[in-house]
Amino acid sequence: MKFYMRKFLLLCTFCFAISFFGNAQTSADTSRKIIQFSGIAIDADSLTPLPYVAIVIRHSERGVYSNEKGYYAIVAQEKDTIDFFSMGYHKATFVLADTFKANQYTHIQGLKMDTILLHETTIYPWVSKEQFKNAFLSVNIPDDDLARAEENLSQSAMQKVAANVTMDAGMVYSAGLQQREYKNYYAGQKQPNNLLNPIAWSRFIQSIENGDYKKQQ
Image (cartoon, rainbow, N blue to C red):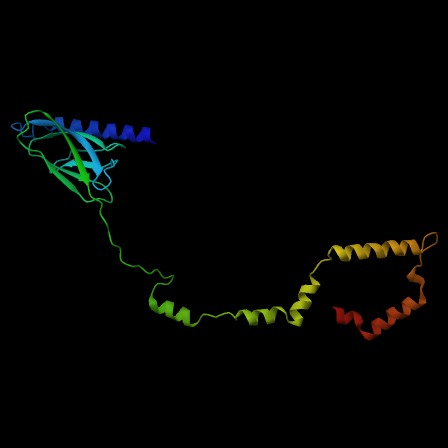
């Protein structure tokens, strides 16, 4: 990411330099001295470098960005007004004097942090306050904890839960013991077949007459 950002900054600097020299013969004041203006943009409170600060020459189309260490360099002229912009900071301004003897000048520009006070914002999931009021008044408030507990412990609720409860480990163990005991009881002999048992048929017919199977359905 830093590599591409560095490439982008170099490209911006090259484009601004071409724009400056291309328009120098027509728009630049040849009577003013050309100065290589460079320096570092820092936080005025912590004195730490500020990356990607926009440095723009006022009333022109030329400007650059500082790199990740806050360093910048731009070609300017005497009496140029240079503005510094950075997100979250106040704009800073520096005016180049016309008393420089050299054609290079190094400047350290401090920017003060900008504190923005945001007003309170309330977000509703409705379009208007009237819709919110109607939805709030018509809402169905659920029962309290005691009412929900009594409903969950009612006889009908307990029967419904019991019908869907599977066998636990103890019940499985007891059923296994009963099957083993039944096999041991009829060991060495043929087990009875209730298909030919008259008593079983009598009980079955009596159950049909009583409607026991209809009740189960």
